[in-house]
Image 1 (cartoon, rainbow, N blue to C red):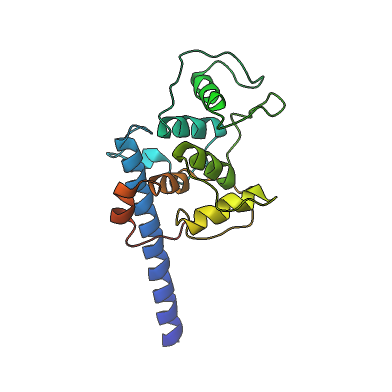
Image 2 (image 1 turned 120 degrees about the vertical axis):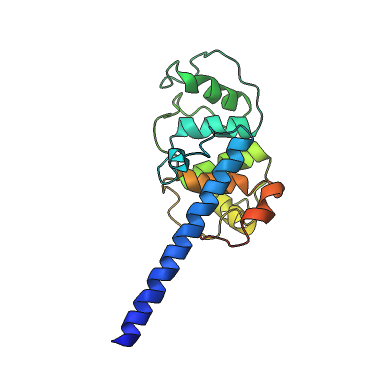
Length: 191
């Protein structure tokens, strides 16, 4: 009985410490991105980063356009039939102009959640990162490249899994050398 108790105690401690380290890395990454002006600064109340929530394609585009320092025109030409003339249109059209995205039957699906692999592809484009693989499986190519470069710590095979905000913030932050060596010495498992 004592061995079972010790096992569960150790397991609970490990899960808590891993979860805490992951959350801490997400917050540090979010604060870093906020310091660069890529996302809103919620350092005084990190729960407002909504780290455990999914992110829409439109929200992700706004972040990568800022990460890439693209010029954003204050107009919307309605290039996509499903993109309304709201705040996101100018970012979506800036990403289109920079070839971060392409026309796909004239729809963009701005309010759908973005997948992990779609977000990796956008981060690569925004940061000028080249894929290390070029097979007929583009999703696996991006995932394996991100893994090999240390942007993610675990490979995955469900390429249509939704990305979470905290996961994306860590991936983007890891593309910057000035933060990479300081916050990730106690690497969390971002799967």
